[in-house]
Amino acid sequence: MQATKHAASLATHRRGMSRARRQHIVEAYLYLSPWLIGYLALTLVPVLLSIYYSFTSYDVISPERWIGLENYVKAFTKDAQFWPSLAKTFYYALVTVPLGVSASLLLAVFLNLRVKGTAFFRTLFFMPSLVPVVASTVLWAWMLQPDWGLANTILRAVFHMTPPRWFQDPNWAIPSLISLALWTSVGGTRMVIFLAGLQGVPEELYDAAAMDGAGAWARFWSVTLPMLTPTIFFNLVLGVIGALQVFTAAFVATLGGPAYATWFYALHIYNNAFQYFNMGYACALAWLFAVLIIVLTGFQLRLANVWVYYAGD
Image (cartoon, rainbow, N blue to C red; front, side, top):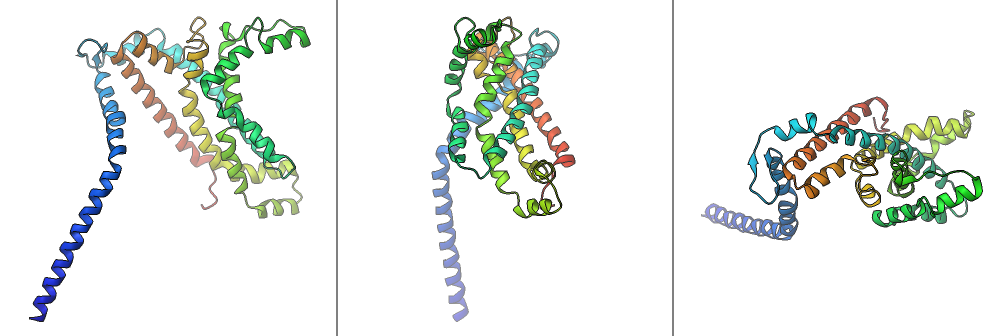
């Protein structure tokens, strides 16, 4: 009899726990529902629709028409700007990423020194990254204005040289955008990440290297760089992805010109989607770009096994 009462009490307790657990689950989903609705409506559904539209001829106004792989074939064989836009994008990334990562690392090493005024210089170098991209692009376009801009005025008055026309010259348009990207990014988040990595290097390693007679450069090359390889790798991956997606600065400063000189791949996608209303083809271009970035990131992850050192390994 006692055992029966105990079993009934245990069953009631379990039912109560189950009911309470269900209530907690429902409450959790209610709290998550704004994010879930936003994710479904603004991310997952558009992604799935873009896959479908990439196999269609769709101009937003008329109903879509299934055409299979025709958009992808067109990209590789018929689009006059597909390969040039990729080449310009890679040129921009191949210059911007190594220069930006190297400059951010050297700046972080300088700002990691225990000297007076370090906090002021950290704030000073970080400030350009706080300026919105559109505002910094407008400012840069004003400074590089070929006739009365600050840069050309100084070049004429001080160096007595004929300055370039910067954004108006096809040969100088991309270098102008590269200088803008370096100005806004060198002292930004990438530098802060390097500073965090530098502060994580054990002082004992520097002391041991100094006792072995290593100078400042030898300590940097033999201690700092190996210990920072995970941080360098992280910044490289993010830098490559960000550089390949360059769009805003080129759109504001040049609209892809002059003479298609800054017609980057992201700008090519935008123009096909919102200027020519060839949305199906733009979706195909976007998915080709996504696959390219995934492949490049995977390649970097494979290479990381060769040169990235993890202290815990």
